[in-house]
Length: 124
Image (cartoon, rainbow, N blue to C red; front, side, top):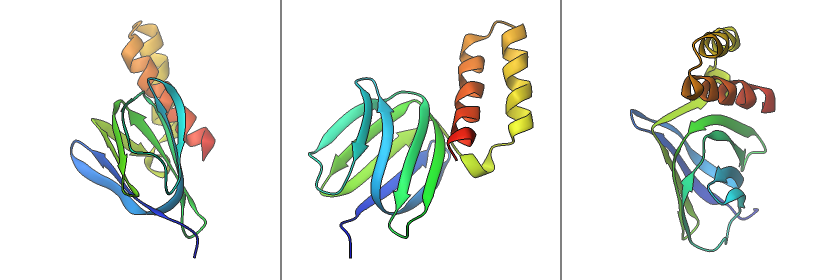
């Protein structure tokens, strides 16, 4: 059995995904980081962007994460964010409409959220 780490992906309002993984890639304020079993302990600030989780079963979970925190110790990784959306749950047409609306209203924060949703779907 390959080495694993336990991952908890949590939004403010729900537990989004929990399980065993072999690799998690996320964007922090220091840049992109890959976490594998045995990684050094870590506490950091997540930047908004896609998070990729390679599950122990060989699958991939992609999520759009909008800010938050990342913590790793003793092969347990926690990703805590205000908003987390699994790529499979994202309505592409709705995200595209939100992007256009945000551009028309010059709402930079809404534009960034819509772009992150679309990037997460594209990674999937």
